Image 1 (cartoon, rainbow, N blue to C red):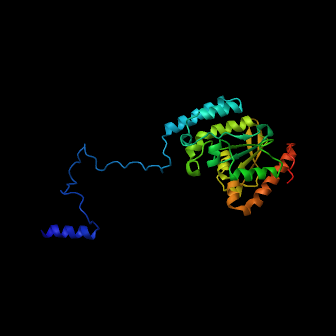
Image 2: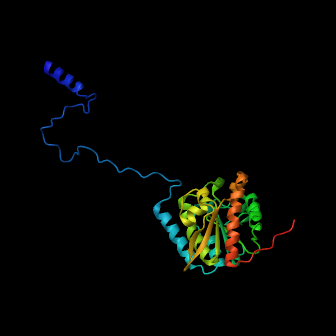
Image 3: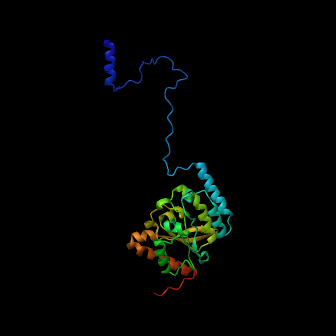
Amino acid sequence: MNDTLSTLNWLVEAGADEAIAEEPVNRLTAKPAVQPLQAPVPPRAAPARAPAIPAVIEGDAVGGAMAAATAATTLAELQAALEAFDGCPLKRTATNTVFADGVASGRVLLIGEAPGRDEDRVGKPFVGRAGQLLDKMLASIGLDRNTNAYITNVINWRPPDNRDPTPEEAAACLPFLRRHIELADPQVIILLGAVAARHVVGISDGIMKLRGRWLEYRVGDRMVPLMPTLHPAYLLRQPAHKKLAWRDLQAVRDKMQTLGLPAVAARSN
């Protein structure tokens, strides 16, 4: 008995504070071959992403988008392919597919983020308050969606509650956007906001760091000048930053003049 108590006291002093089995284990005997000493540790799970879309479905959606977009040889065919595409979950909750608005032959392409409530209802990009501001911004440098400007979005269906699109949703739309750029064949690209910049040129820097800097985008065998600027919806919330957008637009106007792109005469009030 004294030996047992001494052993327990020694274990407590050594830091053992719980029993791991009801019966003592003889460590000198051979371990049963069929009973592992410890269950294998499962691999650490990757961080969850929302929404959770199985990789095979996501892969099929992107593959289907690439095949449909590549097969289109005109903007009309691309729009028909996009309207027939069911691989993006956003389409199930949207009212309309928002393809584009304006004149592609004007050679100035603007790319926004995603449709909002008004755009989803009408089926065209930038038709709400942000669109009205965008029209005024474009008019200040001789651009007009009815004459020489062409507008689309990264995402073609409205995300619920105007939330940011998920990587999976963007991945299903990007093949159509890339083909859209190729078929529109612009001479100047304007990116509206950080989301457009992230998905089009793959740069995750904030828009305040990107704006006002000329970048390039490859279209076929040539590089197209690309200007990131502030989104009109952001300017409605932060009107003091309109002066920054105006500087960007002035740079676009100068680039248009260098490239010989015609501008629309300013309207008189």
